[in-house]
Every structure is written in structure tokens, then in C-alpha cells.
Amino acid sequence: MLLTLKKRSVLPGFGLALGWTLFYLCLMVLIPLSTIFIKSASLSWAQFWAAISSPRALASYRLSFGASLAVSLSAPY
Image (cartoon, rainbow, N blue to C red; front, side, top):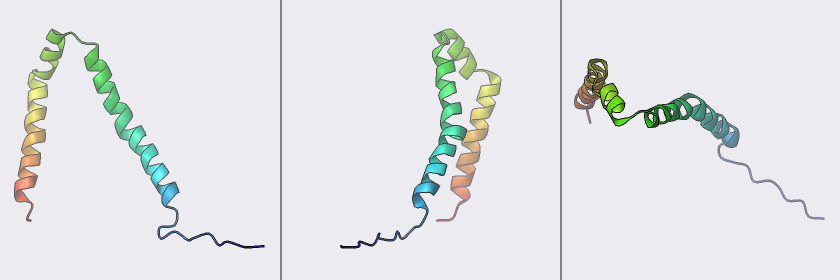
């Protein structure tokens, strides 16, 4: 009778950790992100354009892109 030993993984618990990571990625990121596309698909072109060109949306674009530009320029490489 041959006994084969199970090869030990270099990263024990990797499968479980990857499973939890993917679960929370879906729960916290992908499901809310999919609702954005579902909501925008239900709008007409005029409603969609009004939503993306509103002053509040334009201010959020300026903040997001401005902050990412500032961080990318200030990061030493």
C-alpha cells in the first residue's frame, strides 16, 4: 500500500483567502457598480446627458480627476 503525502502549499489558506476576497469584491464593488449601468440604461439620451452634465456631476469630475492628477504628479518615482 502506497501512501502519498499531500504536497504542502507555500501559501497555506490561499484558497480560502481568495474566496473571501472575491466575495467582498463582488459585494462591495461589482454589485453597486452594476446598478449604475442598469440605472443609466433606463434613461433616455436627454435624461442621461442632463445627469452627466449637471453642475454637481461636473464638480465631482473635477475633484476626482484633479485629485488623481495631483497624486500622480506628487508621487516620487
